[in-house]
Image (cartoon, rainbow, N blue to C red):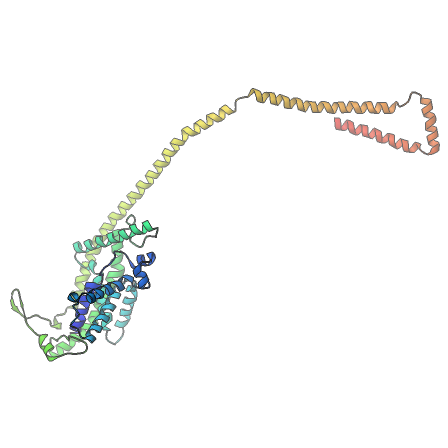
Length: 402
């Protein structure tokens, strides 16, 4: 009613090849390791570019696989342009920009751009496993996380930091899925629902006015009466002849939204229950690790104690008296006493010197006569000074000796 057969074909083909030859690693891993693909595509949507390129090369190199061989040139180009845009939009680095752009488009009176609508539809399908039954959702989750963990193992080997959710030892699986549902999946489904309602509501109104179930065009560029006739062909089901009801009047938006909302909420609750167990197990592991560390420290302390006791005993033995050391001490003491004795001898020598200086000659009268002569010559005063100086020197030496 809104999409042509070519557009629907392009969407199915894009869904089929959107992860063709995936390496099991992320775009960031390719960029960090400077892979050939990262160099080829200049670090931009590395894997998504490879998926499209490799798939088209497969068609081009093998005629038996070329399912597009009967398309006209115009249809081939339109088909390829749609496929490229849809597959590149599955790059998660484009997610938030894609959601924001669609929200803005929904506020505008103009219609929704078809390639953008198809891209959002494929992107939502790509991350839709949390909106499926628990068993299927859980299986997809564990397979995806194992792929992440294997990348983490490679990162550890290469000395690279762990990418988000890639450390198998620390990743909290349940918590990661709750966050994925709350911040990625649910908002995306909400925008998809709003987009679908804006696209389909005018078509329902038109169909109800005209009483026509509608037909599907094979291409944006052309439509023929035979194609209109083909759109109302009846098909035979397993329970007998029945009309294939393609009427747009059967669309139920409320049922569509209620279905995915209910399933997503059920899966979230199951993850919350597992998250509680995860948290408990993590705390127990941390406590055990802490307890093991304490026990290790205690063991180390016990091992150190005998060594410390042996060191203390060795120190005590080194403190016992040594006969050689006593002799040395006595020798030092005698040396000090000898120094003092030398001082005493100096005092006695000084006194002897002064005594000899006092009794210089045997004839005192002759000395008196010389004194008188010196007075007359003006030399007596000078000699008195010299005598006083000699006496002060004797006193100083006595003080130093004491």
